[in-house]
Length: 572
Image (cartoon, rainbow, N blue to C red):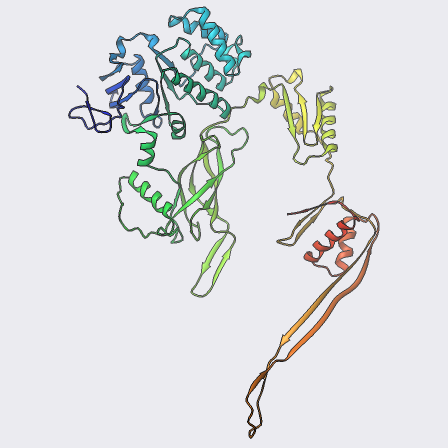
């Protein structure tokens, strides 16, 4: 018999409530145990899912997610316990009750996509005509109708994943078991699959999907169960789990230069949450450590970055930490704009500055609160992009220019021997892949990279007024102009004097102000810069006037205002 607890969930008499049980149960995993030799894959695992809900099954690789799904399907047999759907044991249910998307690819590589979708649906008893029309509807919805009559091996990993999803739902099962369904999907396809999940839920289907990404579960699920070593360690609604735990980025190992815990509450909360996950309870205790700091971790995901590749990360202090020198970054997931984890960072941080201080003086060099970890993150998720399958490429110029774009297109056409490249605008050259390079775009780009192009450089002067740096290109030209530069210095000095009265006088001592004013003008020179002079002549002529960088900035801007300089001035 099942009894109700005060929160509307289900408890068993004498149980310690290992799993999560909502009030209305349709799918129930009841104290399931599975052993493989001496290894216990599932240890009295229990949880329940209501009908018409999306349920997240979270855990690391090897936690027991796939084993649980295979027991539900009858592929594996439980050593103890059972799985029930609406009170009926799973072993007594029709196979059409279940829809299953395995983590590994399960398509026939050489069969056309549409034919095998119809075949899979017929195995579950679906009529061929209806299965064919529904399959085409889903292919159109997933934006891959052109692959209906192509072999599965010709599809990318992401498109194969979408085809497998269609195969799992064509026979309209009551329960959908999806094992890592979002693996290999880019953000666009991930959004399409997420919409499909929500539609199936609205139709009254029960969806259970496994993942190790809490962000996905939070975006889609009403409730989740977190499994570790075959046991449910946490379960409930997303709101309940977020109240119970949190995840923040923490750096440790600082030599007394970390955040002031009383001033930075989120650092203290992060430290408490981390220690509690390790079994150390410090709630209510006074913490005075100065070796911990909260930081922001950022990184750039490179093009064609593959799983397992290492990338650099930048670490920046969030609180009032004085220096990150000597610190170690704890394991930190790096999220993209779509909320998915693309890399995981960890390691010792190297900084490019330092701080030293005494009782009355302090020296700071560089920025000691920002550091970098070389190869400090491992890419965990790839962005799918089938380069070799493209029929058309767009080459983006780093420095947009009409002449350079035209020269690139001409050089490519000369190499190919046909008009395959054309400039679309100053920053883009479009290249149609020739027939002999179809399916081997990398070889084409390798040849294109070797072509020698003489870029057309725009005349430009770049000025950084903060540091006084001036950079001028070689094509800067100046029309005839006269330049005069002088420094006017005004000096005002106050030297007050004391005026005392005579000894027998009845006067009083007063302070008499004395002010001296001086005016000095330097550099009374007029220089003539002739028409069409080069950059070297401009520099030599202005240096002859004894002009420093900051005065030169003002002179260049004045020449530009006079219309005598043929260059763009960019002030940083």
